[in-house]
Length: 467
Ligand code: ARG
Image 1 (cartoon, rainbow, N blue to C red):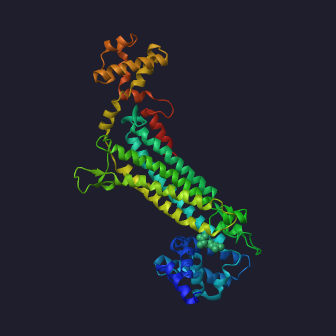
Image 2 (cartoon, helix red, strand yellow):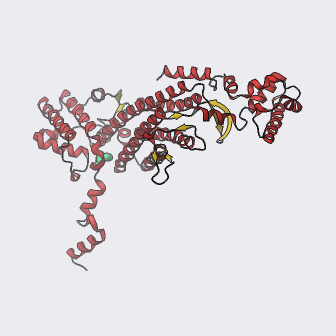
Image 3 (spheres, rainbow, N blue to C red):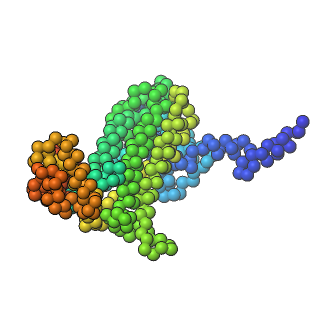
C-alpha cells in the first residue's frame, strides 16, 4: 500500500495540468459560474434591493439595516460598472460574490439580506429579468429590420423580378412583394417575442429554496417593484422552471432560421450569374487573390450564426430533459446558451438591417430574368380560360405546346407570331400579347395578398400602421 503522500502525488499526476492541486481545483472549475453569470450583476442587485425593501416594509428586517444594504448594493453596482470590482471564482457565482462584498462593506447587516430567499429563487429572478430585457431589445431590433424592408418594398412596389419555386423561375412577382414576405416572417417573430414577454411576466422571488417561506413576505410588492405583472403561483415550479429561457431560444432559433433564408437569397442574388443586387462595400469583402471578387461575408456569417442559435436551443432542451423537480445544479448550464444565442441574434439582425438598407437593387437584371423561362405561361393559360372559354386543363395543354414552340424557336412567348399561335389554337387573338409581358402579369394578380403593385401597396400600408 502506498502511503498517503505518494497516493496524493500519483493522483495529482493523473489529473495533471491546471488541476494539479487536486479535487478542490476540479470542483471549483466545474462548480463556478461567475465566469459567465457576472453578466447578471445589475439584475441581481436590482432584485436584492427590491427584496430588502420588502423585508423592511414587512418588519422582517429593520429600516436601518435595509438602508445599509441598499447603500452597499448601490456602491457595488458602481464598482462593477466601473470595472473596479474583483470577482472571485472561489465565491462561485454572482450572488455570492455580491453578498461577500456587501459583508465587507457594511458588516453583519449584510447577513440579513438573504432572509426568506435562496439562491434558487434569486437566480430564477435574475435570469428572468435578463431574458425579459433581451426580448425587449429583440423586439426593437426586429421593428428596425421590418422598417428597412417596408422602405425597400415601397421603393420597389413596381419592380418586377422572377418569383421562384424549387429555385426555378415560376411566375413574375414584384421585388416589393418579395420584401413584404420577409416583413410577414419577421412580424411573426416579433409577435412571438411580445407573447413571450407577457408569458414570462411573473416574479420568482420569494419562492425561496422551493417550498416558500414562513416569514411574512409580500411577493406582490417585490413583483411590482421589479416591473412584473404578478408573482409566480407555485414555488416548486418557480425554481425548476426555465421555460422562459427555452421560449427565448425557440423564438431566437426561428428568427435565425428566417435570417438564414434571407442570407441565402442575398448570397445567390449577388452572384454575377444572378446579379439581382450589389452589396455595399460595408457588408462585403474583396478576395486577397482574385481582384474581381466581392464576397457576401456578412450574409454568409448571418447564415452560419443560425447554427449556433439552433445549437443553443437543443443544448438547453437537453439539459432540462428528465430533470426532477425542483432545482438541480444542471440548470446552471442554462445561461451560456442564452447569452450566446442572444449575442448572435442581435448581431445577425443588426447586420441584416444594414444590408437591406444598403443593398443596390438591379431592377434591369431582375426584369430581364423575370421574362426568361416562360414565366408568363400561366398568364397565357389563364387568358385561354378567361377569353377563349377553354377548361383550365385544356388551356394548360395548349400553353404547353406554345412553350415548346417558343423553346424550339429560341424566343420569348411574346415574340411568337400570331399565326403560329393560332395554328396551335384558333381561339387565340392578338389581345393575348397584353398578358404575355411581365408587367401585365404582375398587375393582374390583384387577389388579396397577391403580387400586383396595388395590392403590395395595401400590404405596406397595413404594416406601416402596425410598425
Ligand atoms: N449559480 C447557480 C445557478 O446558476 C445559482 C443557484 C445555486 N443554487 C444552489 N442551490 N446551489 O444555477
